[in-house]
Length: 221
Image (tube, rainbow, N blue to C red; front, side):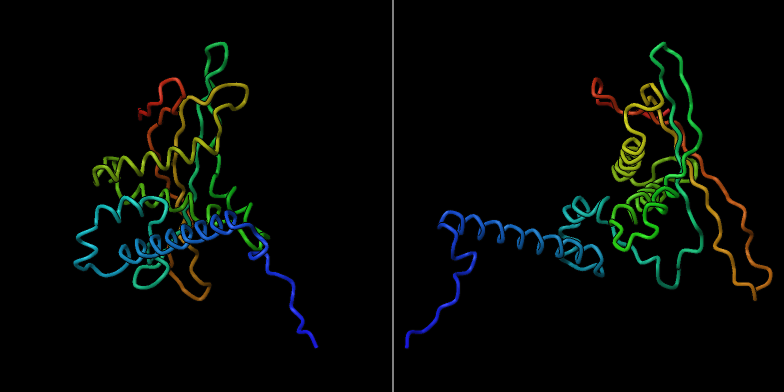
């Protein structure tokens, strides 16, 4: 009795060049994944000879998109709700300007995530981490404290706000944006007396000039 053979696999059905392309692609993905995991491990691991030797390369790869922190856990869990808000100055075609009201960007992200079983990583963390990165590299007078990382954090936050407003708004061109945060303490449980207040505290940044294709430059006023 002749033996029965199953249908050929999809990979076996491919031509030799296609199989080579698939193998190269899978190899590249595997290398990229291992490289990413290695960089994150060196970033979060206790200081050691290897992480010190390659500190510059690790930091250049990690910041700002992949920065890690442990603020969810003791001894210093987050105890405040921080909402990043922004407004834009619009340059009208006739030469005049107009200023929008404050837009709660964090509130928009939260509303987009609500009832979404699989919200994106960007919706959950992009704006929050951008603000945290900025405050970690600037003092309360908005002066840089971390050299090039301070410039990177400001550029990163500005880029996000620019993208949220877009180049055109309300019939004009977005010329400048301004960012502030409203920080509200997390309410204490009902059985705790003498808890912290619930009023918001604001931190307002200077106006930032928006990048334009013609200049490609970025300034802060």
